[in-house]
Amino acid sequence: MDKDLYDLPPEELANVPQVPASLDEALLALEADNDFLKTGGSSPDDLIETWISFKRLAEIDQVVCAAPLGVHALLRHLESYGL
Image 1 (tube, helix red, strand yellow):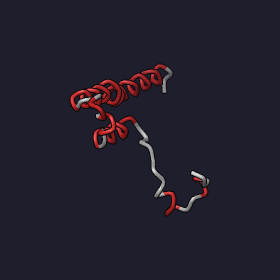
Image 2 (spheres, helix red, strand yellow):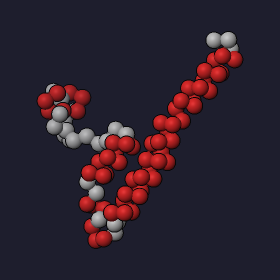
Image 3 (cartoon, helix red, strand yellow):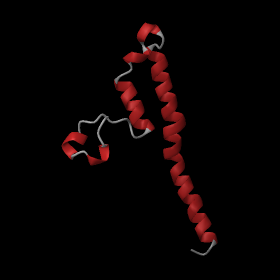
Image 4 (tube, helix red, strand yellow):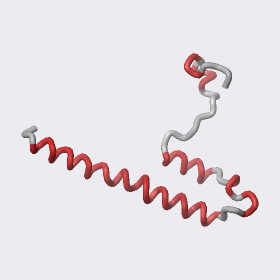
């Protein structure tokens, strides 16, 4: 861009391409468009699907599941101070 993005009016800013804001959004975009990985037969569909599933299981689901445990530990810590 040769313009200051912070000074663009909302109408122009809406036309500026955006990158995914999270890993989940990036994986959704990869599911929707992964033809560039298949060029020359280097990445078959099952490899791409397996990688996406692994990233969801290992990184997204773990964070979502761990959050309540972190809150529970914080509450226990606060209780130890009588709060």
